[in-house]
Every structure is written in C-alpha cells, then in structure tokens.
Image 1 (spheres, rainbow, N blue to C red):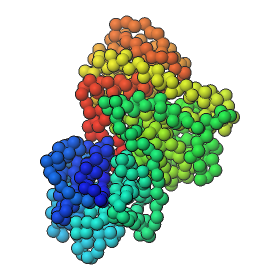
Image 2 (image 1 turned 90 degrees about the horizontal axis):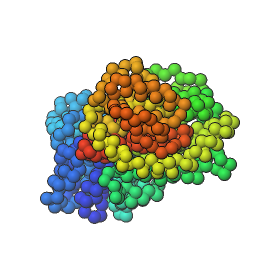
Image 3 (image 1 turned 120 degrees about the vertical axis):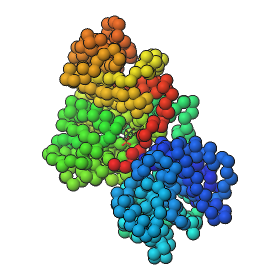
Image 4 (image 1 turned 30 degrees about the horizontal axis):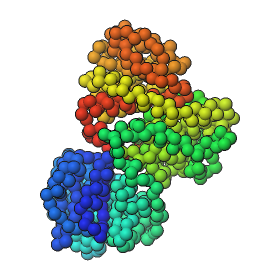
Length: 608
Ligand code: G6P
C-alpha cells in the first residue's frame, strides 16, 4: 500500500526515480509525486493526481538534473485524493515520503500548529515532516539523530524515507510496520518498498528489519536497530530475472499471470516430491520440533484470495489429513478474544507476506499459546516469513496484477502437498500417495483448461453488460465460487456474490430472475446430484444458468453448459478457478477496465 522509491546516484536521477516508482504502481495509484535536489541545491517537487504516467507527462517538459531524490505512489488513507495530499511532503528543508498510518497524527498536528506550522494537506505524513523540522531546529542535531529520537513520538505503522535539503548527501530511511529494501549499486544506492522496483538496477539487496534506521550514502550504508545499535544486516542476492516482470506478449499482467499457472505450479512442485513418494519442503525448518504433525487442530488466517485458498484447504485437511481445521479472516481473528483449541497450530497465508491484517493476526496469536506457526508465502524476505516460526514458499514468481491468480493456485498446490505430508505422518499413506500422484498431472490439466479460452470469451460477451452475477458451488468448490466472484468484482466492478449452493433456498433464491445470471460450478463428484437439484430450483424460477462442468447436462433455454475437460476430483478446485479467472478477465476487458490496477485497490495492503 503506497510505494516508496528513493535513490542517491552517480547518474542523473530522474529516469531512475520514474522507472522505480512506475514499477511500484501496483501498491497504489491514486496519485504520485517526486522530489529531487537539483544541482543548484533547490528542491524540485512535482506531484499530480492519477497514475504515474500523468507524472511522467508532467516531467517530460522539464529538464531537471540531480543525484538525490524520493518518489511516491499513493493509495489514499489520511485525506482524499488531491495534489495537496500527494507525497513528498515538505517542511522547509525536510522532505518525506511515507507508507503507513500514524495513529496519533491529530495530536501531533494540533501540537505543531500551536508551534506555528501551517499544514497544506490532510495527511499524517505532513505531521512527520513538521515534527522532524521542529525537533531538528530545537536541538540543532543532524537529521539522522533527529529521526532516531523523534520516531518514538510516532504511533502506528510506517516506513519512510527522508532527505534533509541542508545536507543532501544521504537518504535516511526508517522501517516500522511496512517493508523497505535497500538495493546496493556501484557508488550509488537505492531504496524501495519492494525489490521489484530495483531488479533492473541491482541484484544485491538488504532488507531492513522492524525498527531499523538506515543512513544511505553513495558509497556507504549504516544501519541502526531499534535500540540504536549499529548493526550489519545480511546482504542477499536475488535470483529473480528482470525479464520475468515484463508483460511480454500479453496485454495485461493478469492475463500473463493466468497463463503462467502451469509453469508456476511446476515450479511449486519441483524437487519437493521425494523418490519414496513423500513430500519434502527444504525451507520448512521448525524452531520447535515438527509440532505441526502433532497438532490436534489447525487455525488458518488470511485475507482476500489467500483466505479463499485457506477455505479450500480446510476441506482437504479434515478429509485427508484427518485434522480439524478452522479458517478465519485475519482482521476478524485479531479483533476478538480467542478461545484457543487444544494443541492448535496456526497457519497464515499470504502472497505478499506484508498484509497488515495477517501480520497483526500472527502477532496477536503469539499471546495464545499455539503449538507453533507456519506461513505459506510467495515472498521470501517478507515480514510474515521473518516473524513466523517456519515458512513454505509458494514459488509463484512475481505477481503484479492486483487481482491474484497464480499465487492462489500455487498456494493451493502447497496446501495439498502439506496435507499429503501430514497424511503420510498419520499413516494415511494411500491418500497421501494418491494426492502426490494427482498433483503431477495438475500443470497439464491447467494447460488443457486454458485452451478453452475462446469458449470463455464467448460466455464473457453474454455477461459483460450484467449488473449482478451469482456464483454457486458446493464443498471445496464453494470457496472457488467465492474466489470467482471476488475476481469479477475486483476487475469488472460487476456486483458478484457467491453462495454455498445449499444456502440458495435460505434467501438468495429470492433474487433469481432473468436478469441475474447464475454461474454454477458442477464437476463430477459426490455432490453433483445435489447441485443438479439446485439447477432445477433456479431453472423453474426462470433463472439464467451457466454450468461450468466436465459433465453433460440437458441444455435448454436459459441453461448454458460451459463444457470443460475432465479433471481428477482431488485437484478439481485448483482447476475450476482458472476458467473463472479467465471469465473475469474477459468481462473486464470487454468493459474496457484497467485490469491490472482496479480502482480503489492495491496489491499489498500494508494498513489495517
Ligand atoms: C489485497 C489484494 C488481494 C489479496 C489480499 C491479500 O486485497 O488486492 O489480491 O488477495 O490483499 O494479500 P496477501 O498478499 O496477504 O495474499
């Protein structure tokens, strides 16, 4: 949520800043801005509402030369979307970009206004800028000392980068709650909210930890931990290829990411199945000895698409690994008093590993005596990975489209592998082996369903002008219906709701008429007969039905069959989400929406 990019360079900085902030646009795109200290030691600040392209247009006319600067792309929290609220915020010589929310900002604002500061924006960030200026002038200290002392007065989540125009030889970065990663260059250095923005500049990274303050100069970086001790943080070399973050032949990242799913799943499975048909995750090192396997209950916590993946896995954990499992939305979990089940183990799921609600849920869970915790995550250096006892990587590769696709199917793949592993441990060998065998076929099956794109395109044409769409599923296809509805809402802005098909008669049936299409996921499984009954109930009330199935159905007026290839029951949920992703994609395309950057949303939600 909000992207920060800053650099101190040998080369002229402008293109580097623009390029960096453009790559972080997925974190928020309400407005964007940058500030550079130019060769005459003037601050040049350019800000505008809208996407980074607007900023680029504005800058094209100007020739600005400089070697230190900060840039920001905003997802509005404090204050509406306006130029005045766009970062960087300035207090005389102090320039700040910030990601997060300062909870006590109104108190600070009143205090600073009394000291004579004028606020030009409604943001909490401007309060940080004035606070730093006030403290610096009071104590006549260097900006790094001021930051070290003043951040104690800030309550909330933040990561920020500051430039002191009076000494433009360094960037000062502070991390508390939101990620920041330093990119190491040759006699130049960079810092950003995500390494994606840095991959074309360097392969060498240092992730800041909670409470760290970094002073970044061209040739030197010093980091201080929350106790103000100078420390060395580990340097990591990224093996992510810059090429992998380009759209290539695709129109949108979401399209690319949908089509990448067979490859991502292959990567997720790679080297994890042992010769004796057991599963081994090399990164899964428990601090406490393998407590997951002795757990009598699993508590899963996640948000958005990751929550839907957790919901699917609940069916698998209980049916195949014989372990009771509950799933809860992270923001709900951390806002209620928990009565923890006996010998319960916590699993969090997150693509980014930075979702504030999921992180708070993990932190909150530590008060309750869970046997241990594990995160299933796509980002190795992320906060969730760092703060969890153990982790498994989904290996989806970088996902840029705001609507998650490949991260969902790889999460499900990991979850099914984990279920097989626990099933093995519990001597449920037959099912464990069956799962492993079936998982091998999964990438090929996804390839087969992706070939149905023309069929889905035609259905999309019929549905693009609808105002409301219902999605129904039963069993583990119910969360798939939820995920299908979420995809559609997110990118096409069509109101879509999902129900467990059995719930239809308890309310939603009242909605049925010829204007609300109903998408029903009906693969061959033990629930098919029940689903057929639901179809009849809708049909006899003149509902318009689209059945996604590998089975034959009597196609009558108002009943459309979207005939899909055969799929093994065990992996059917991972398979059935793919046509629903395509459906949402083509509908949004028909409606001319900005698919990768849907309005009001951001990929990584780092505020609660
Ligand atoms: C945001 C994104 C969703 C994502 C959710 C959870 O809302 O727009 O696509 O599913 O966050 O994100 P996580 O990174 O924790 O999986």
